[in-house]
Length: 346
Figure 1 (cartoon, one colour):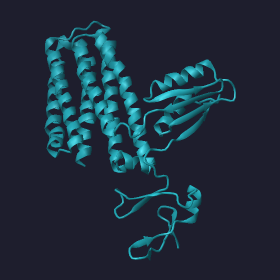
Figure 2: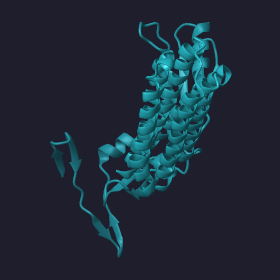
Figure 3: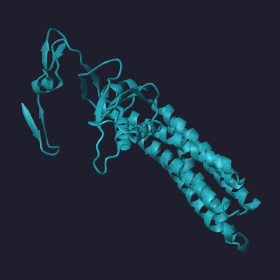
Figure 4: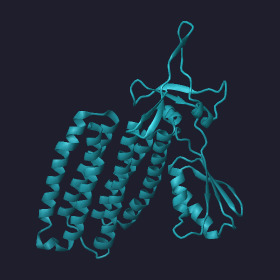
């Protein structure tokens, strides 16, 4: 029997459960679905309970103990608006393992360079075959080889250290350290891309989700958390750019008083981020309340004190750059601390 679900614009079938023998229950599979999947007699399918929809079963027709290889073809076009790098990154993020990049004409040197520079932005991608009209890329990292928790922990660690070193570079007028902090953001972006790839693979492929032991709801949470941390890294880079273009370039001296207060605020945010990370790991309600309530208020109070101090005439040159840096520090504390703790609580 077919029933139309008008709300979701779909048709589903009602099947009767049959009992054979003493304890075996049978349900026939829809022929249209079997033909579409190309199932044959004696093929194996995985049946497991859904962790999202209570009481429902999921049938995975491509069951295996390892993940499947996904392939995609990318044609190099001369059309205006075609972006080869964007196509490769998109394929990577959507979980494709093999990317067959081809052209009807010979691939140009600058196009080859673009492919190579793009692969450097993506963890696990290597050129495995190359000819005059074809380049094949393969992702050598399995979606289940590195857990999402480890990927996000690594992003958290890099960004929190970027924050610490970024402020040290500013208060110590250390241009070399400042540039090093900016370089680390490239690794954050690479890890973020890997995280998105892992998440999308888990959402699209029930087998990968099963092997990864992650639910779609957890995928959504991890996606928000990963983006928040990646944004925090971008804000730190903005802070460094303000330092380079305003304070360092104009040889503006930062007083010891300003340095100490800026370092104090950063130290508080650093601790707040680590608490948020522990909230994410341990689902600690106590720590979440500390981050959202006490820590946020204390940081705002310290920022207000420093802003009032910057109003003194002797700090007129520092007011604009330091005030902008404080704005970014508040954003970092909000997205990489408060928002993550709030997400875990909800």
